[in-house]
Every structure is written in C-alpha cells, then in structure tokens.
Image (tube, rainbow, N blue to C red; front, side, top):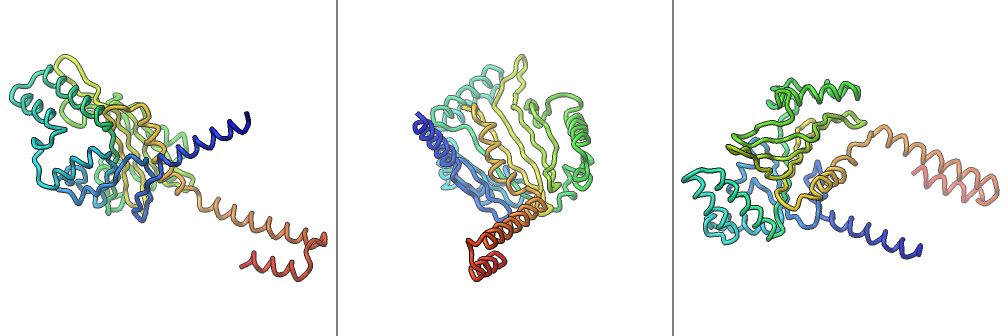
Amino acid sequence: MKKYILFLILILIFISTKSFAKELDLGMHKIIFPNKFNIINWNDTSFGSSFCQEFSTCFGLIDNKVLEIVNQVEAGKNFEEIKVIKPIITKYNKMIDSFSDTKVKSLFKTTKNILKKNNSGTFFTYFRTDEKINDNDMLSEYGINIDEIREMSSSELQKFSNKIKNEITSGKDYYMFMDGLFINFDKFTISKYSNKKPYLIINGDITYLLTSSKIKLGNIAYYISEVDDKLFVMDGYCVVNCKSFFADFNQIIDNSFKSKNKSSKSMSTKKDSDFINQIQELNELYKSGVLSKDEFEKAKKKILN
C-alpha cells in the first residue's frame, strides 16, 4: 500500500511539473507557464499596440486556437474570412446596426460556446516599461510612492491597500474601466517581500451592465511589481472553463517571480551557516581519526575554494 501511495504522489508531482514546463526567458524574468500555452510577442504583430500601449516589453501566453487566428490575421486574412470566429463577427455587426440587450446576450453566448468548443478562453500577458517606477503616471495619479511602501509595516500596508482601493472605486467594490464594463474586486492587496520589493495583487471578475440586467464575462487577475526599478505587470483573463484560473495564475506568479524575491541577506546567512557546518564536521572527523591530517587539509582546501 505504501508503495502504491508513493507511486501516486510521484505521478501527481510529474503531472504538476510537466503542466508548467514551458519557460519564457526575458533576462530580468523567466516566466514559467503551462504547456498548453504558446508565446507571442505582441509588439511583432499588427494589432499589438492595442495590448501593449506604453509598454516596451509585451508578451502574450495564448492557446493553440488563438495562435492559429493570430497567424491568419498576420497573413492578411480579414476577421470575416476566419471560419472559427465568423459567427461572432456576424452577430457583432448585427448588434452594431441595432443595439439591444437580447443581441448582446446572444453575442456573448455564441462567443463562449465557440471558446468552449475549441478548448480556449484563457490568456495571460506580461508587460514591462522602461521608465523608472516612481515616474509612472498611473502611480503618481493615486499618490503611490514606491520608496514609502518599502518602509511600511504590515498594518500600514493593509490600510494603504484599502485607501487606494477606495480611491479607485470611489468607496465601492467595483471599478468601471470602459462604458458598461466593470471589474468586481474579490482581492486587492498591496504588500512587499522580505527584500522590500512591493507588489499589488488583484483578483476579480468582469461584468457587462445591460439596460435591465448584467452579464458576467469572466475572471481577471493582475500582479504588479518592479524589477530593476522598472514597473512590470502580469495579467490574466478567463472567459470559459475558469475553475482553475486563479490557481494557475498564482502558480505562474509563484514560479516566475516570488522565488526571485527572497531576501539576499537570508540567503547569504544560510550560505555562511552551511560553510561553518562543513568545517566543523570536517574537524570532528579529523579529531576522531577518520581522516588523516593530509586528507583533512585537502578536504578543507576544497571547501575553502
């Protein structure tokens, strides 16, 4: 029975590791992400500006079907000519001609059905800017100073998180980022690592407000931090099949960023401690007669080098 349980654990570890086996090496960061996604540099595409805006580094993680569509568009095809999304484009055009709640609901229903059918509906994006983080207009608009955040205590960070959230939402739990489109916040946390690097995590869902009702469009997640004093953002959107979306997003963040933010002081202390332990163990082996003087000196020299 023990061997069987061990075997199951090894399989689960293998599956977990394998599913997050792809890597995007950006120098400052290595993004570890699930196998089912493909890397795309949005700055190399004709419609990348709509994703990237002021960010100089802008990469997407997209599934096979979305990559197929992007490649067709880049090859010169119009959206109306792409078979898989043609029903969506047709309904969208009809909705523009005469807007109604019924047509909007029908459009979203068709979109979700197509995404489900093609095992699609989730994508992630990594952005990085070249400007200094304290020069960022978005941060300065809300009076966010990174140097001040670095010195805040845990309780101060919690109060600061609530203050910024209230300013963004005008005291509510949602934020309208486009006409009729709202982000409903489930999580809004400003915190920092042991090396004082600050970060913001946002989890929530997107809702579209109709005349008489509203439609939940999917889930959204943001992770914002700094690297070499530059702002970077990792975000994710999920429209269908979102059961593991937040867990997948958290794993990308943990694998790609959190391990890089351990305190260098604690790592240095650990190395010093390991070094001292090795010397002490070597000395005990010499004193007990297990090692000759010559063997002791050679081993000690190897550790010192």
